[in-house]
Image 1 (cartoon, rainbow, N blue to C red):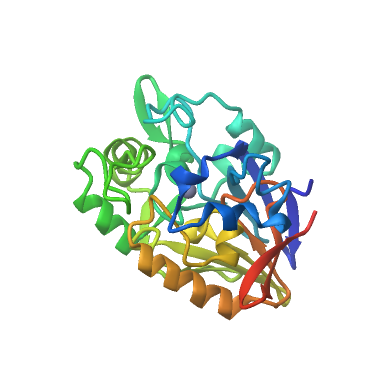
Image 2 (cartoon, helix red, strand yellow; image 1 turned 60 degrees about the vertical axis):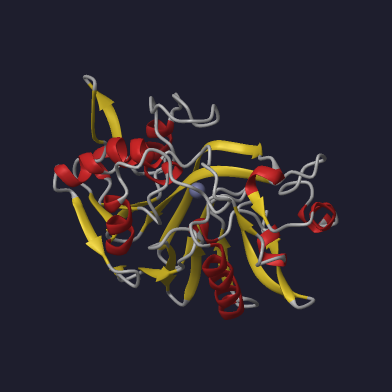
Length: 300
Ligand SMILES: [Zn+2]
């Protein structure tokens, strides 16, 4: 299956930390109809399993432009104490894998976090002699100004409430901000950016709020070719067909739904490579309109 794409002069490589794993639909989705989900035959077998659960992945995109080596989201990280066994105390060969993709620790120029949830900031730091220190010593870490303001204000709240009003098992915000974001800020390696920030000539941010207040997607353009890395504006191709279906850890469900409709309407049916930040393999494809909503056409 394809893990690398060329967009003009830019090479994008997917490095998987966890996946492809089924995630319980009733834990993930909000406002959904299980029978409707089960009827989405076009999602099978890769994005919907035999038990009608969405299949997800956690991965980083290594984006190499002619001048910059960029990591888009840094997964969960090793050794991190997390609620929920899926993410707790991982031990993976992530650093070797990104090095093989041309992003050895000391060669990374920019780390770009679409938002500051645990599965997007983990490898920002790693454990050295019992302390969390920045993993990429020569990188500038780009954090959204609005996103950081939200989490800085909430950094000592133990568990953030998800959209259900109940504590979400995977949003363990306080620990995440303290072990994966604050050490970067204290080292002075961060830069706060706006949600439309131009990262380099080929890469810019686009505001896609709702999942978190300052959430961004990443638009890559080179030699007239385009790719979009979704971030968590959606988690599963099912939300292309049903954009009003949210996930339980969206911070503002209605805003997230509005963002999806606006974004899909803007970019559907164009020659744009759509890369889903949590889409299981195959992760890249086209966003196409279908019977009043949209679908994902994977490219294998
Ligand atoms: Zn995520």
